[in-house]
Length: 260
Image (cartoon, rainbow, N blue to C red; front, top):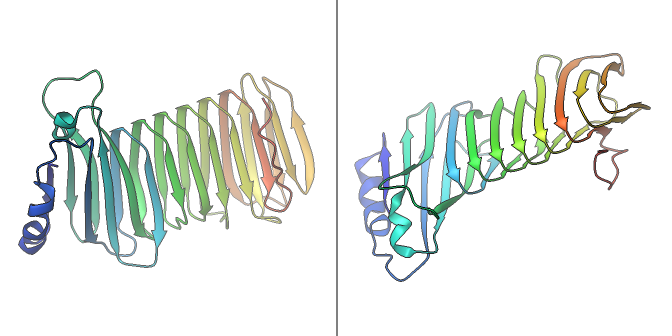
């Protein structure tokens, strides 16, 4: 497995060298694991072309990167390089492909732990789903072909996907923080703390809007919903093209899927 790590100590590079450059002939997977110090409110950037990404908050001032490369052809595993640039205030992780384009390139699945207050500045996926949990810092993330699921969120959040559902659950909201959720082909489901004051602006071009938050609102396909819930507060913007939008408080959310 090949990786490039910048901004880290010589000791870390030496420690990783034996495992990262080990022969992987005869296997269809290879693994990577490394940790990087980061200040509590530092920035994290992740970019991945093929494969799912899971990012979870923890109470440590470091980023733990665990990645698994998969390929039907073990000889193509080295075509996918995991590149990490790190400093005290920024950890940037991305997958870089070398050689000629392959019909079935190696995919990389990431499991990343970050400080709870870290800011996910630029998380971009092309072919893969994204899972987020426990983030208190600002989050800006997108996927082209993949769903996004975020839980136990409490900071400013901007999420978007083209082909896939988008589900977000918030433990806390603040009038200082914007929540923006956008999909093209797939439903949006938003869960908010019961009693939270929010200003909602939701627009759906070809699906319905369903809100059950203290009282019920329903807008048919092709309409928009603008409402101040519980006196107003946090700014929430929802936009969808093909798929339903549903907004529920944590106590009233149902097991059913968003309206379509």
